[in-house]
Image (cartoon, rainbow over all chains, first blue to last red):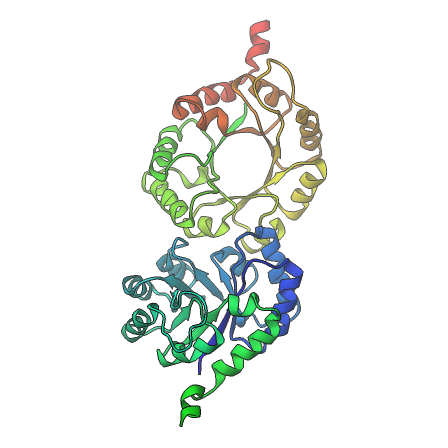
Length: 209
Length: 209
């Protein structure tokens, strides 16, 4: 079983995005708000809309802007590689769940030592779905996974048919952006990912048996 | 007497900028860190350097990023027009001094009602120094100044020779970016502005007498 993190793709207006998130909330474990081109005012409005529509704050992850999380009572902050320092954020706000983007074994170990609650490693796959072909990042991911006590999530090119590879690498979960938000129907796609991510067995293996 | 706010111009590398600020700190009342192209990591480093070199935190104003101010113990945050909402920031962090950029009488009144500690109105002058010619924004500024109980600072095209006009409009202070940081010697320019800003009388008037 994999946790499913949906990551926004910075392509929808605030209200349209809010509506998608509200409709997909039962399918996903986390919605990671990563909207770099939006103003802080727009991001604030988006978070307000989600809260007003009773999206559980435990499911919302704010990218980069710790202040937006604090002001909206959201307990999850994801710090990018060139973002706020994990150690200082954790020290000042120990109640927050803090994630860190990492791109190497070394960065992953550092993030754990600094107090990150999880790491997001990528990109594990290069681009489009190539049946059964592991991306070059998955070996590194497995190495990271084994060396850490905190959960490691995989990100990058995780299509539906690659979820099983991510599961076999013992990821805590899969972070999916384009597979959900670039699809024709993000809400439907989130549901499809969810069904496959929540399967207790590796579907391809069980079918082979 | 005018307060002098130096506003960074986002053109210097972190260490060079830190050095300028450290050297000009006695001349200025506030240094407003507005470096939009820098990463959060770089901004954090800049604030660390300033603190390490004993620049008084009371003089440092962080633009936009409330979180950077909180993590570095800096008591001043300046919220741009499309930034975090003043009311919510003030409610959650009443100990902070919160400024707001405004561009009209209406925005200035709203900012005060929301709890801003000061407003920064601009741009009061269009571009280059034209001796004794008030920019079209200064009448609006005077109107704002009279209607508010909180301090109003003027920004925009304030050259050395226009400081007296700003003083006559009863501004709490002048915010200067290019006049200081685009000059050949920012530290020397800050000193020149300071001398003129701190003069107790309108030098041009006293000379005329």
